[in-house]
Image 1: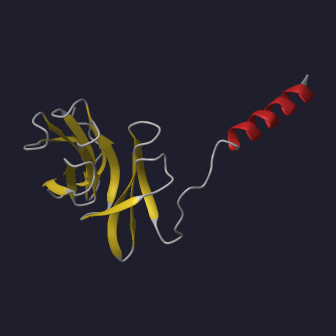
Image 2: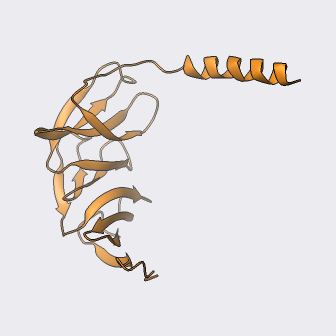
Image 3: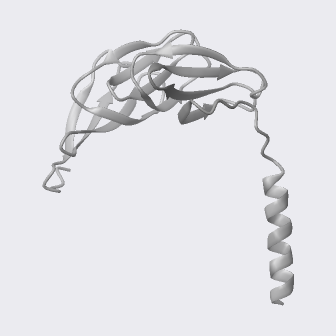
Length: 161
């Protein structure tokens, strides 16, 4: 029985491994986030020290990539449709309204944002920390025009919600 289990496992692993194909590589670039809207249209966020941070965009499933620059070091991407997307970064939250061609800083404070998620084009959340480890959640209900910041946990480990 164990022999069949091991053989099955090896076959499944080889099948799963065969699905991955390297499409883009640059040993000097570090990638932090990937987000695909469908099998063709997707984005990768990253940086290359000391060069500017970047967002890569593909519309052909990763065969070709177009780069746009972004101000802060990106940590997380989320797109609500093909035009509108958000990026949580070390220095704030960025937004694009033209499919990732340009990115604008829409919110900035002392928090280093690590994740962003949107329910629709208007309602979204981001989470990040402020040294020395205060954890914050920010919320918008108007597409990022304004944000409400909530302290989730302090450096002492006290939960605030």
